[in-house]
Length: 282
Ligand SMILES: [Zn+2]
Image (cartoon, rainbow, N blue to C red; front, side):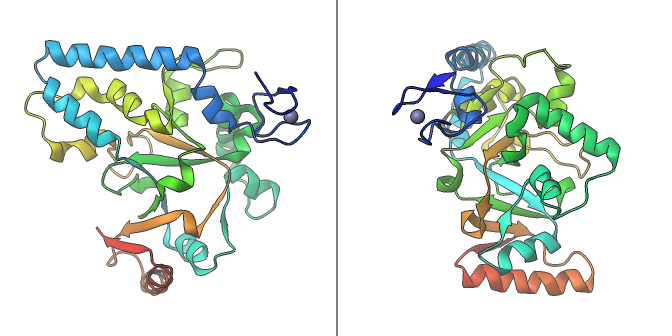
């Protein structure tokens, strides 16, 4: 726990502001990723990836990969109905699952999935799980298609002070590490936004070879064959909500879906164009 810079009170790990005087304390996910023990464990994994690359004779491509990863961004895949809702009115906000259910904006998922979702979020973030929006780390603006056909790319400035990255998507991360109540996640598997390249190098460095090229990087970082079970990516955890102005561009195909979908998409493109946001066909 940290102490408030203004009044000296202890700020709980789950809070973004001091509960005595309201002074911002940084978001809980970023504070957690920036703990000295996390930073040290991440640094060790990052250095180990460099050692392995030196031994395996692919150091120069790892350096290229590392450089590219500093230019990654967060994408959220959505369906066309959501895209239409979100882009048509600047007052609309992106809402987390927990917030939407609490506010009766949507029905809960089937109980089995609702339970899993809350267990994963609660296990990793406790009571601030309701504040976390989930995105994927991407090099080419494409995201996991299993979450929707359209990838919204977020502006760096909209998230860099409140986003962290996690080794896998949180479902997989909890399962892989057999995280149960009382068991802490392993150290070195999360990073602040400025350290996201280190996490990606630590995770993926070993998959590079002397013949890997720059063109291979996007799919190495994020592979999506259309099923959530086989999707593999680094998850971006964004604390708090955001509006349409947090979007830089949207990527997707204009030729898929029903006639109604394509009508909605035509309107979406108008909304994007009016707001000065780019539509990327792909
Ligand atoms: Zn205070």
